[in-house]
Length: 194
Image 1: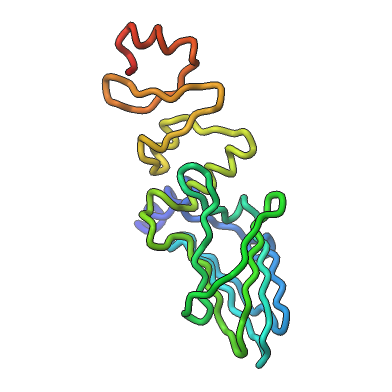
Image 2: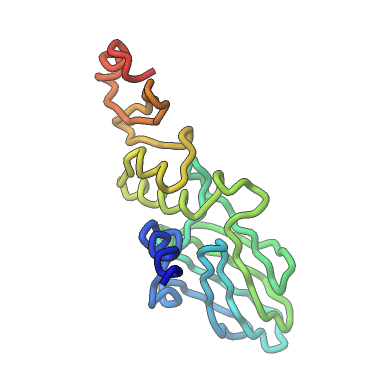
């Protein structure tokens, strides 16, 4: 029962995703072999693809919707994942088509596991799936209030506002707020923001 109370808030916040059709949302084309399975390890920020290259050299093309797995920095710039093929880091090509990320990986004979890893040497607060989800919402013109961004783990200096609003800090607790540009002067005179 304790596990339910520990995991439930993570599911609600979207840190751990549960989806029966997760594998169905990702298109994987294995040229020279076959896909055996997909495992999403959201809490570790990785995705594993079990493949059988059947003693052939080939390529694996992975098409992932941004709504499922989108990696960005705090300024919504795409960040490439680290990709391991049977435990070794490899070079790959990576581009976007509409709302999908396309990753193409060359594979050797007898390749068994391809692992896509979200975070690398960068600090967890600068590169994450949380930022990716937030940026995906921004691309759809949906913005979260500053408090919700902070609750998701954003640093106060990474909080972003709609284009029509200005980001300021409250004097009382230095918390970020989004206000209309017309009200900045009034709020500053009252000592509410700086």
